[in-house]
Image (cartoon, rainbow, N blue to C red):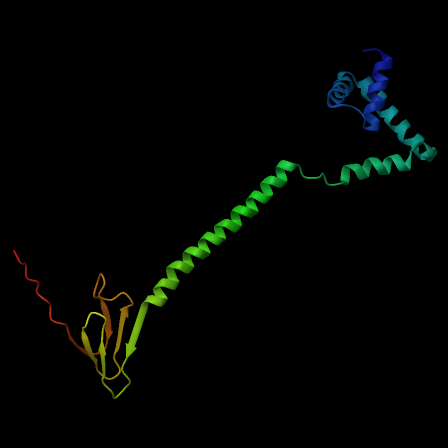
Length: 175
């Protein structure tokens, strides 16, 4: 590398216009010999002293434009916006699915349970949909589902009750 090339590389390095490859060349040149390092320090000092003596050399508008372009946030790419909106849509869909599932599950359970209670000091008579007669003692509660007798005959009793199941009808087969 001749003197002119070295000077050009050093100026680019000092002004911040050197490419990564040129930066590496300058570093190698400086570390190659102590005289090279001394020359670089003198050139660096001279450059900065010249800027102090002649402030007109620095173009304030160019410097501001260069700085401000580096500070402006880059506009997100179309792909990045698509991913962001996809995440938002997936979150909304998930919340909607969970809400619908929970609503369906708990609203059926709440609506389907029926409760009958006898007041304290009174007896209450109930006839269930399958014909079962129930006498609830005072302060007792009976819970059953709305579809009682269709598939199952399950009741939940809290307290005392007397139950009479309807007679089972026998079917006769005619041959």
